[in-house]
Length: 222
Length: 209
Image: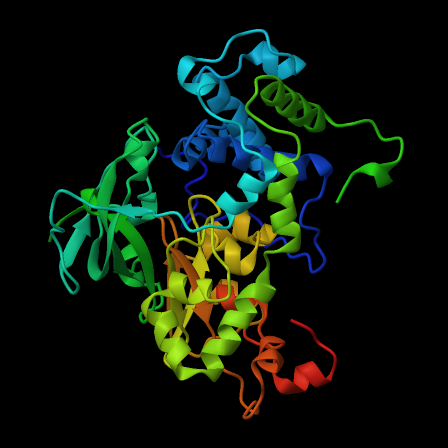
């Protein structure tokens, strides 16, 4: 979706917020929501793509004015409600009044030791695709000009532009479909190179380029 | 670390919401005591740019390790025991006299946690994410980094499952240094591409990575 989270190429966002001695968390609630949000994903209440889609639906004015971890809090509350795990009243009171849906009631809460192990273990982010990749290194292709209202990992500034396949990266978890509940979805993924001039016009650095990983679904023959 | 030092300041609306969320999920049997702390403890105690610096220092010292790192970065990084969320599919980009690489996530805040920990605020917020793809050289100037005209700048927008770590060029004057000495030169920003490693001179003058 074309919301405020998709920032690449915008102007007017203010100075870089440098802070040499910034703490990892500015307030204790940031520390708690960082852990609690990630724990909901690890427990199986949502996948990261659903969480990202919840955060990108935060209204733009609020998104811009709120600190980073408030996005995590807003997003977590959103998917907990949308997936039937919590009601607004429960989130306000902290007291359970509605039963969990069956699928969530079957999930097992993780012991701290299991959390530590899962968090520090590599889990596959690619899988076996039923199809062969369509493109190979060196192919010239074009990204699609699409404007889905749902989650996509094709940023606006890279749409409808020619690019070159740099590397095939395997069939990665397909975020667009996973954000809509198709959790097993995969798509062939390529690192592509966009020439800066093709993205931004003649004023862009002639030697410069953007490299980005795009799903095959986003690409067409040039 | 905690908000106790704020004394009598009442908890914010956000603090109350987070507390309610945790209480609710605990009561529903989805969160166990200590599980949230287990995650934060990993960030606070195990992850951070010191991990990445060890990887870079070894790549500078050991040509065979560098080959492994450039071929299968996640496996080579796991040789140190660094693995897990946001590091499952690592790719290392090497800076050379001809090419300077820099990493961003324009859509959210994707970042290689096992080797760098949580990202700094500037990495996560709008000014960096919006500008570095359209005017990388101007942004790098604001980090104090001037890229010569003849050097190509490659901006890596890590929007998919892959996570990127930059292998900076080894500073001159470090011949014969041990891995541990070299690691002291490797800054966080040099592994994002918004900075360079410290020079031996800077280290002598007391700068730290």
